[in-house]
Amino acid sequence: MNDLLITLVTALHMGALHPHEKALTLALAFGPFVVLGAVVAVRRRQDAREAGEQEARAEGQRDR
Image 1 (spheres, one colour):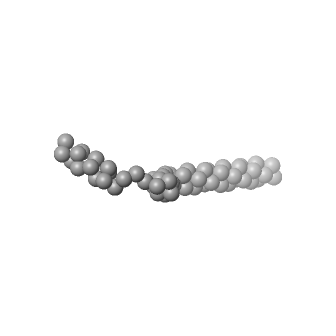
Image 2 (tube, rainbow, N blue to C red):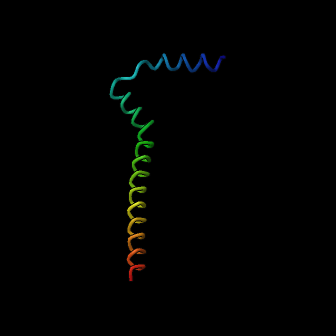
Image 3 (cartoon, rainbow, N blue to C red):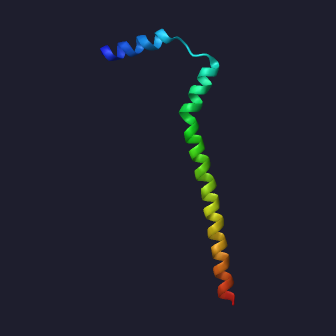
């Protein structure tokens, strides 16, 4: 209980964040997850394209 009170008092003592501080905090909190999602999406597209190319090559070899 005492730890919670100390945390609340510290948060209130620091005051409210300015809008640019809130934006920076949100960017730091969620930015890495957004970047990770983008990297995963790009890699999945690349893997799907490579798999399609491999299938096309395999079909081309079967036709010979």
